[in-house]
Image 1 (tube, rainbow, N blue to C red):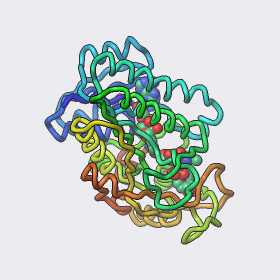
Image 2 (image 1 turned 120 degrees about the vertical axis):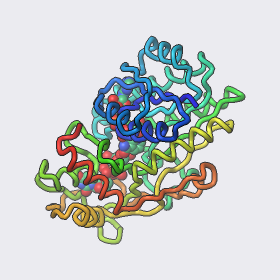
Image 3 (image 1 turned 180 degrees about the vertical axis):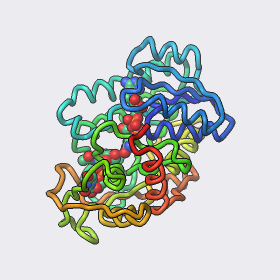
Image 4 (image 1 turned 30 degrees about the horizontal axis):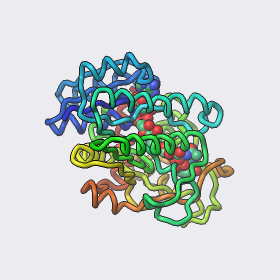
Length: 336
Ligand code: NAD
Ligand code: UD1
């Protein structure tokens, strides 16, 4: 199959690109403007996979960029990763997020329609659920995102739903990722935040390697096993595999499905610190601080829909997460 990856050089995009190439049966194009990634990620994917793929450097919101990509590559399906993802920044610059994420996605769907490409897999997020009314979150849980970033994901989901409904042979898979973490086994590609990390695992990893002094734990009086926040951490390799299954599903089916991508199990901040200390053989100094605004106590997925529709489930565990994240961090202490 011919698959276009918007945001193909990013953290999740590069790991998915590698998997698509390792599958051996795919022609792939990565479109990226490197606003939050490095061309080095693509060079490394090429080396690791020992296969060629096409690259287009440009902003996916530019109609002439998309037209030229679709005209030359003619994809059967698109995996749409490109967009902005920092919750705090989205509170400060909501219009930037609506432009980059929502307007950008509308332009992409319009271009797909003009070129007869009717299959899309979209990077959504568990953040669309908001405060849990019950756990685990299943795909029918009410959607109530609590910040502009989360609302862009929610709006794009609805726009894709309408776009699919308007055409008889279109299909979409809205993958609601829980917390993607870890790195490829090779340690050649991984998560490379440009600024001080917002997310737990890259922060811990940079403390372990000595780039940051200590971890701040945001709250220890949540209603969880040990009082710290509980999340469903999904290994990037499993997440990449879910995309391959989702593209196949979209090509074989019609309609729009939202599907959780998680392990179904929650891990607390203190459990993650301990697991990382064991994997790295380093101490992670931390201080307990106040709660971070907008944080929920617990978040984890019901994963039966992914098993049923995609034949996919997470294989890797917390030990794999910490081992591969540490391998990537030690091989690339300053990122790419
Ligand atoms: P990332 O920032 O590493 O990757 C996004 C890529 O898109 C980057 O390479 C960036 O340069 C590119 N990009 C951004 N704007 C672009 C534009 N206008 N034109 C072309 N390229 C552009 O992020 P990621 O972690 O790989 O996330 C990928 C997708 O998954 C995002 O849509 C994100 O919202 C979603 N998501 C991520 C997480 C997570 O924790 N990483 C969780 C849920 C959902
Ligand atoms: C964050 C985003 C969410 C996004 C998700 C995956 C916020 C409010 N939410 O969620 O929209 O979908 O990442 O990218 O930013 N923690 C610390 N210290 C830190 C960092 C985190 O204690 O330095 C704690 C948090 O309070 C939380 C857990 O670690 O309990 C995980 O945090 P994080 O990795 O940021 O993920 P989410 O909070 O799930």
